[in-house]
Length: 372
Image 1 (cartoon, rainbow, N blue to C red):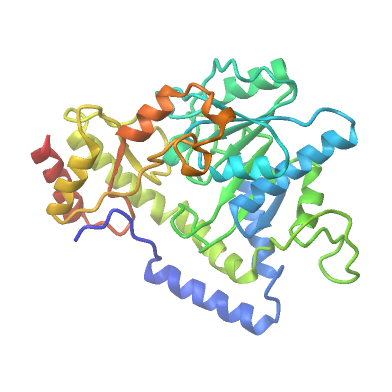
Image 2 (spheres, helix red, strand yellow; image 1 turned 45 degrees about the vertical axis):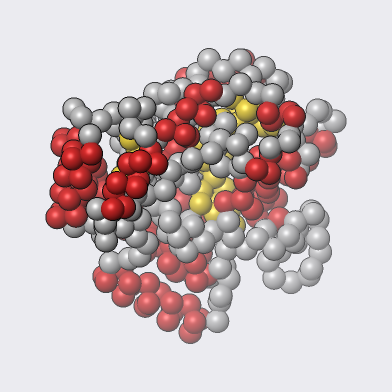
């Protein structure tokens, strides 16, 4: 069986992680120790920012950020910002915003970038939060133009969701996550930077200090007097996750990125004249995305399964509107997002992970060609 996704580490990386784990367990610092600080520094350098707030998940990171942006507006006696979000983002973004009392507007995607469009008329609200997800590792090549336009015309705060795109680069403009006011990361086990679980807010904003406090119930100091200054919760990132993270970071920008690019280049050279492959650019290749409306996804998945090949999961196979939790939400259902719906219902992802052998890649290519 050829797996569409396989999570793990090379033997060399496992040995490094085990050594780090032993250091953690002997140190007595299971939170906020040596590896925690190292991991923060790696993220700050990666995204060209001066603060990195580590959290227990990307959902916590989103919720903390949205809470602080709403609070900032309240303190200035301004109207709370609304969230403007592409309709093919993960629904936890909307849930996090709604929990913090923010109105949510959905926009359709640009089919070339699979992401937030340049000409979105929805960004008409004063001081909105513009949330841009780089889908599957494909960076939005128009990010600089979108960010400039939204900031100048609307006073927008730009949030880049880089859960899929750590290791991706904009065309000639540095690493994904560098151009937004905030980069939100996910370190879940399946992501390009795998710490088993976790998230982060990486920024130059002064809000980082309060974001850090919110991960520890709102306490001013991590240790000492339990004096709560904010309505926070327990969202801490453990030293154990950080011990994995410093090794995973090295892997994500080394072996993992190199091997995935090799596989992607083989797919592209062998298949691009037969099927419609998304322009991935300088991607992390979290996913290898094919969007070809001539291929019926369910039939193709069934065929590949019969040949002993599982596809990687889609990104994503439902729009926000099509999530059952929002089925009766009149506001979200009112937005017109036909390109999101088309992409989510039609695209599929070929097997992509660093443990695929050359022989397995050749087999995948052979069966795709046989099918088409």
